[in-house]
Amino acid sequence: MPMNLSVKIGGLVMQNPVTVASGTFGYGAEYARLMDVNQLGAVTVKGIRLNPVPGNPTPRTAEVTSGMLNAIGLQGPGVDGFIKKYWPFLKALKVPTIINIWGTTVEEYAEVARRFDALGGVGALELNVSCPNIKEGGAQFGTDCKLLAQVVSACRQVTTLPLITKMSPNVPNIALLAKAAEEAGSDALAVTNSFPAMAIDIHTRKPKLANVTGGLTGPAIKPIAIKLVWEAAKAVKIPIIGMGGIQNADDAIAGGGGHPRVHGQKEHCRCARADGQRANYKSKIEVRI
Ligand SMILES: Cc1cc2nc3c(=O)[nH]c(=O)nc-3n(C[C@H](O)[C@H](O)[C@H](O)COP(=O)(O)O)c2cc1C
Image 1 (tube, rainbow, N blue to C red):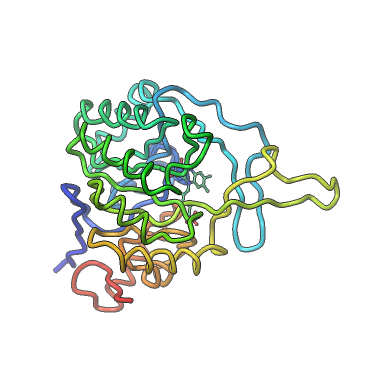
Image 2: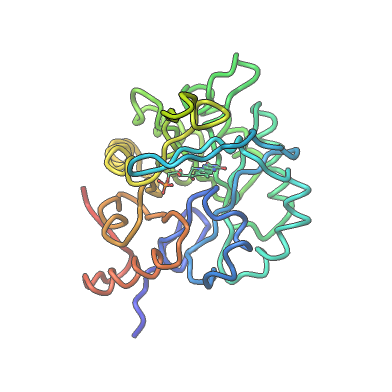
């Protein structure tokens, strides 16, 4: 008999607890020729704001020891461009879509949430709060409990879709922010986003990224991500989607304070499921810390 790995996040039902990290899997369609996207628990797409965003100049990725830096600059087609170009593919999938959204004002987050609520058929919204607030001198929404609560609650007021708050790791006490997101109406947390970092090309003696700094992701951040998941999990009752350096089933299980999210490879999601069987898990992958 097939094993039941399904999980529920608010009203979002996933056939298994594995999805992909926003920004590492395009809008799903790009990966459809490499894998059966319908094997995932959900497809999480690259961040969308209201209007199109050109992104940063290149080079905007760089390999570093045990990970990578990126400074894509949240390039994207905007809400209308996304709906026109990518939604037809996503809405035809058997698995739900989690749309990662962002803005530079609380009002913009709410407007993007309202637009996706009105679209119909969206699985959940993930709020990327690692973005500068232009009304508050560029401070990140996700580093201030009050601002974070404002974003979550503004979105909560305009949509009944499940809300997942994607936490910033650049905070002294993630527990306080996790609690603020929960109290403002978030159905789940995603932990964690990338870590600010920089790399130098020793031949040119210049930064490897045109943007100078970027976000560090990959295996290098896994132990830090696990600690953040643990700290957040102690503070809230809502589920946590754990991510950061998950490359295989063992990583996913180790980081299983919530539902593991892999960095966009077919083998990874298969591996996670196969490992669940190997370890005789009865339902979802579950690790108690
Ligand atoms: C190229 C790239 C683009 C990303 N774009 C987004 C994004 O648009 N929104 C977001 O919330 N996170 C974004 N992230 C962060 C990832 O979703 C994830 O939190 C981070 O990469 C840690 O997981 P990993 O170590 O498995 O890559 C991006 C990461 C990478 C590498």
